[in-house]
Length: 307
Image (cartoon, rainbow, N blue to C red):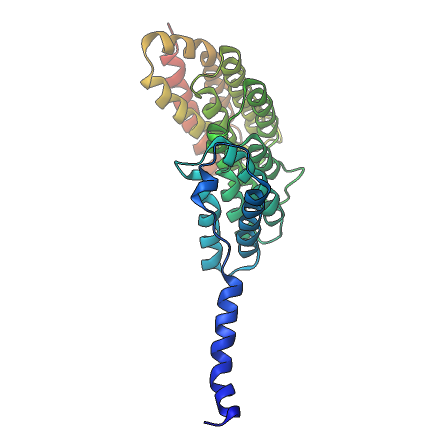
């Protein structure tokens, strides 16, 4: 075989081998994931290289590769052997690498990046998700909806102290008070409920979360029924009330009494106001139906809340 012919045969194989080698991301040894001491400079570099390589795939890979990159980035943080020392180091490296992807203009890649951030289990990760649920910092309505939907689980998994949780509670309540999309608003309601239900949360923090829930219901009621408001927001009220009813029915007698004292007045207010708003002229059939079923459910809850 001539030299030229051999080159023609071998060149595609050499190029394929070279490409495969270049695309193979670095591995993350289990010894780093289970580390019980501060990571060495070398181990930190390994973590950074791992985060950078897979984040690059998240940013520019084909959809199948993006899905794999998401799984690879989530895996170490979810590992049963992952120590707090590793999680903190890993979260910082990954968050720095995927934050630009989350902030990009490709919703598919942004959503995958947010799903990675959700599993990083740190307060900084929660802050990053919150920034994408805020219309002042996130212009995409679909991204805000996804971010709001990830918040409750991210908060539950993050090692946040009461002061940090209280700050998050206030921020979520402030976003809920102005959110115009009922589906995103419903996610904020669920987030406040998830915070209130965290195990071991001090009573003042639980009280703040519950009061924030009530305030969110009140502000949503005003925005759904006031002149010039958006009756479509009643759908968030209705579905939020459904979850509160399910909770209430699972509570013991003493817990239900406390719950009723907190929410009873707002249930009664929702019943009266939505019933009146449903009779207004000019409502679409869908809006009228939403207000009517919200009034009916609120009436049931108000009845359950009576001593």
